[in-house]
Length: 286
Image (cartoon, rainbow, N blue to C red; front, side):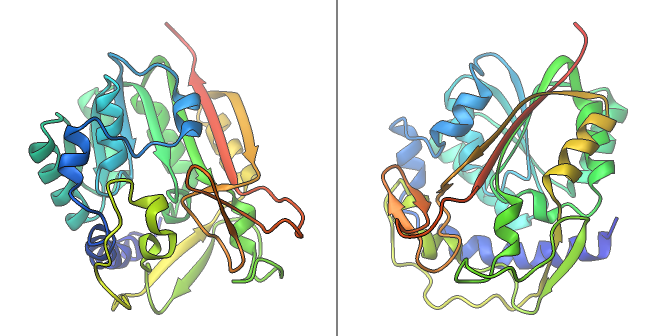
């Protein structure tokens, strides 16, 4: 586990989070009016969350977490970024949607929650979480430890295949999987500015312009085999594995075309490719 790199990433996320939220208009009012930032794919994978104890790991600034609370879940969000969790708490207060948010490294929080005997009906991870996990085996064991018997792990993620491609999406530029470290001198970018309205359902604002992150970042390359194997080794039973030929809110490379519903896909003259991955796994027991 590379805790030193987690700390570097925390600083990069603090800077990026401020830029991201600068583009989103009056989010509290959006939620008070019943708005949601969830896409249909994660809602279908999650199923009915009413009354469920739901843990959202690497929850960022809490918009999806609060959207799940709007559906009736009792939600807890965890993220390493101070800025993200501070924003999530403010958004919860200003929108009137109850949620609990913790600022912590996900590994530390899972260990401490297991020691406290906390369990959840659903553990949820979404969009962009995988590349920030430096130790997949420890993470999977931590997820399994806080799942109640019969509980489910549910995830929606950009497909690891995309991480291999160059900025044009045409050339294999990186090796696949195995936990390799990719380091970037300029850390997390302003992906909300790239995606535009697809990631700003409350309304897109010009916000911060020409954002450059002053902090580096470090990502970790994991393949589908890495992911599924560690979940199985942690004692979970795979139930669903899906691939999608588009990406929600993520123009992954130059030339992607916007589709209805905030989706992006290769242009019509290019072959389809796997762009998102959905997975559910269950802890056995009653």
